[in-house]
Structure formats: structure tokens, C-alpha cells
Image 1 (tube, rainbow, N blue to C red):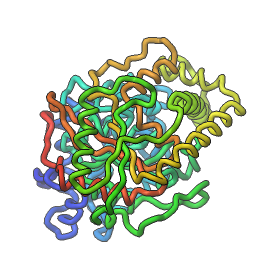
Image 2 (cartoon, helix red, strand yellow):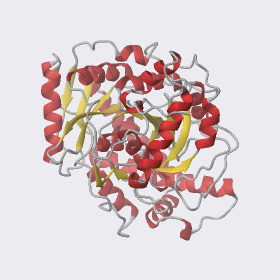
Image 3 (cartoon, rainbow, N blue to C red):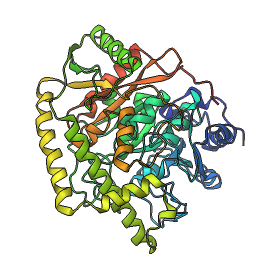
Image 4 (cartoon, rainbow, N blue to C red):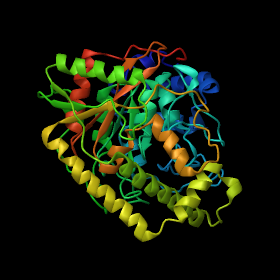
Amino acid sequence: MTAFPELDKYDATGLAELVKKHQVKPEELVDETIDRIEKLNPVLNAINLKMYEHAKNLAGSVDMSAPFAGVPFLLKDFLAEYAGFPLTWCSKFVGNFIPDVDSELVKRYRSAGFITVAKTIAPEFAIGASTEPVLFGPVHNPWNLDRTSGGSSGGSAAAIASGIVPVAHGNDWGGSIRIPASACGLFGMKPTRGRNPLGPYFGDINNGLVAEHVLTRSVRDSAGVLDATSGSDIGDPYPCPVSVDSFEAESRRQPDRLRIGFSVESPLGTTVHKDCITAVKNAMDLCEDLGHIVEEASPSFDGEMLWSNYTNMCAAGVSWAADTWSKRLNKSLNKDEFEPFIWDLIQRGHTITAPEYLMYNQTLQSIYREMAAFYETYDVWVTSTLGEPPIVLGSLAYDGSGPIAQRRKQATFSPYTYISNVTGQPSMTVPLHWNSEDLPIGVHFTSGYGNEGLLFRLAHQLELAAPWWDRRPPVYA
């Protein structure tokens, strides 16, 4: 089968259109994706599991009516389970666990026509703002191989940015879609809490802190995939409100005149790099040029209290995840099978009592009630996605000072993204700026609960006004 070297000239929507018009075969797209993985993965280290023969078999029986018929896809090796193929959570303790049931989200990716060709690397238990698991090694940023691709969906981000695929799976516990999308010059949307299902094993995770979606290069791909995957599954604890018929159709609509509040200050009082400040201010100038009302304004909340309560809830969440795997694998937790940071975080989580955990959650819910008033006045809140440009690999190496201190180091790099995990609001990072070192700097937009449609409309307007499609990193297929 001949490969299709023009693969990177199209987004996922465009590739599906070619397949449906019989201008390219799914087999050709799969072969091209495999060729690109074999060429680039030795440099990037983005892929940890190859599913080549399975993908080739699927390519021969594609449902041409599916929205993304025959489009190659990558699945992050965390949370989403693909029956018959190893799931490691990038952890020695989990090992090569073989699930026998697809996650509901995986079923929906298949129904949408995607062909999963490989799995991508994440930090152990997907905890971290940089993807450097001991089990598989660090993922390198295509824009500069010495820099992080972000975390925790860093493998997916590196693969998309380098031209291996146009779209890949990610999930977001505190920025894990948006951090790597920003670091690699991609579009990344964290949907509203409950928008995508987590079944059959989970109703929610960590009281709704975790969300599933994809990373993409184009806005319409992100919107179209959300159309294909969103909607509650049987028994979901809190279905997300349905505000539009089609996110993809919304992304083609011109937004109304929006009132946008922005900030260049960290809610934790940490330093925000001048390049990130420049990115925000330039984006706000662009929004004003597009007719929107722009004002320097932020939601009112205690940033330190929010971060502290969120961090303790995450520690409990990691302990829960470890205990869940211990029960599922029928083996005891073993310090030697975890990275020191994750082991220490597990131990910290085990010291948190149930009443303390519920109090943390209650405090966060109270903070969100305070913050929600901001969105009665403003349509969108804007910050930089990260506190600094993509950092050098190894910068966030654990020094043994304790898991909370380590999380604070990570929050200096990513001081904003976790906030919308706490509130459940949709947030997106848009690749609107590159600095003098040609490193991408994402700009972060958050809107009201259930309001992805507004964000997609604004994102597409920005995509047309300041296009990023043709920007290519030095490491590219």
C-alpha cells in the first residue's frame, strides 16, 4: 500500500473528507502515520505502544458515514482503556495490564471513525506539568528537543506538533491538555465537567477534577470531535448541560461582541515570564481589533486557598488511584515500583481523612461561587496558559523536598490551568504567540459553565485573524 505524504497538509476533518470522496484510502493514511512514527519517535520519544497490525486491520473496514472515517489517531496511555492492548498509566506498578472492555470514550472514538495506531507517553499516573516518566523516559518538544512538551498529555502534543497525526487523545486533571498544547503550539480545549463520559469504571474522578478530550492543530477538529464524543453515558452522576446542537457548527459562527477580562498576574504571586505577558497583551490587542471589549479584570478569589485545597484533593486522588490499581491487580503497593514523587504523593494522600477531603471540596465549591459572579459581567477571562515558555527538560525533577513542595514548583510553571478543573468550566489554550527563541506561548481563555460554543466561536475568529496552521517546528515529518 502506498503511503500518503500529504497527510500533514490536512486536519482530521480534511482527511475524513478525502476518505469519503475516495481520494485517499484509510490504509494509506495508516501507513503514512506508521512511517512518521518510525521516523520521528526515536527523536521525540512520544509513543510507547505501537498498534500497527490492529490499525491496518481496522483500515480495511471503515464506516464511511462516520465523521472522522479512516483518520489515524493516538490514544494517551492513561485512563482510556482499549480492550486487548496494554494499559500502563506509565507506571511500573501497573505494568502491562490488558483490559477486556473498551472505555465508553474509546467506543465513541471508534464510532467516529478514528483508527488508533499507537499510544502516547504521559508522566506516571499523569501527574506532572512535564512528561518525563522513569518507565519510558522524557518526551521531547519538537520546537526544541531540550525543552519539555508539557504534561501530562505530552506524548500526544509532541506527536501532533511534529506532524505524525492531526489529532490525539488527552485528559486534563489540572491542565494536562492545555499545558502541552501551549508548549507545543497547538489548540487545546478542556471541556465542561461531565461533557465527555468516564464510564464504565468511573462516574467522575476526584469530584469532577478530571476531563477527557483531544489536542488538535485546528479549532474545527476539536469542535467536531467533541460533537462525536460528548453526551452523558448511562448512570453518569451529573450530565453536562447541552447548550448547542453542534460545536463544529458553532465554531463557524461569528461571535457576538464579547466583554473580556484579562490578567497578567499569577494568582499564587509567582513571577509570570515577560514573554507570557507579551502573549496576553498582544492577544488582547487582537481581540480589541476584532471589536471585543477588553478590560484588565479577574475573578475575585483566594488563590492560595484554592491551590492548597485543590492540591490536597489531588493527593487524595492519587492515593485512591493507587489503591484502585492495588485492588484491581490484587497486589500490595510497593515503594520500589513507583517514582519517588508519586510514592510520596500517595503517602500524603493516605494521611487525609474523609472529613478533611470533603472539607477541601466544600471550600473549593465556596470559592467557585465567589468566582462565578465574574462571569455575570464578563464573557471570558484571559491569562497566559503557562507562567513561562517551555522549560528545559529536568527542570521539575523531584528533589525529595516533599510532594506538596513539588506541586508548587509545577504550579510556578502552570499557575492558571488547574483553576477551571476546580470550577468545572471550559477553558482553551490558543497558539497565538511565539517568542524570540521560536518557542510557542499559548493564551488561555475561560468561559462560563457549559459555554464551549462561545469559546469555539472566539477561537475560530482568532484562528482566521492570526493563523498558526503553517508554523512548523524544526523536528517535523
